[in-house]
Length: 201
Image (cartoon, rainbow, N blue to C red; front, side, top):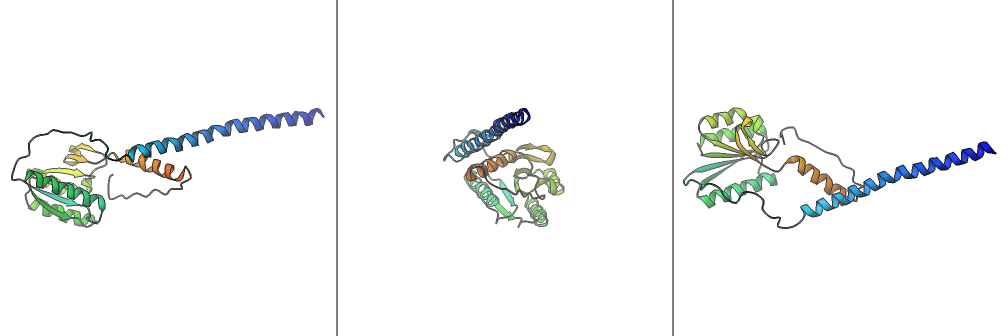
């Protein structure tokens, strides 16, 4: 009787411990879902206030800029090009678009074509690391290069001969995407992550 009673007591203790330890992951799961929903709500607010610069040097008149797009069928590249065109029109610069048509071979041909136009600047929405030879040639000719999603991180990129690379931090984008998947599925999403090795980002 003593052996069976001890077994029952031990089983009871194990059951209580099991319940106590399983409660922690459940609480953590609930917190993760709640946190993800809060992040998504914050990102989803309309008309987020502009936190970038509001002043800068006056643009020189009569310059030209070429936008080399990775692929005009890509919504991001299309939108960025429209922004460059609008800015050029506002300051009175000549704007030229060259479509890279989604292939590194076409990027190279497009960038060489852009350099041949001898613009003041080239806005590049393609992977800058794979285009260093023509970029160096353009820099030697006095052309300034600005990257748009052309490197792995935002900011100045002198190692890639870019005055600056304009984009959001892809690590933050990835976290936001993960939060959206968690929030939208209430923590039940199953996800496959795909990457593309033609782009450092």
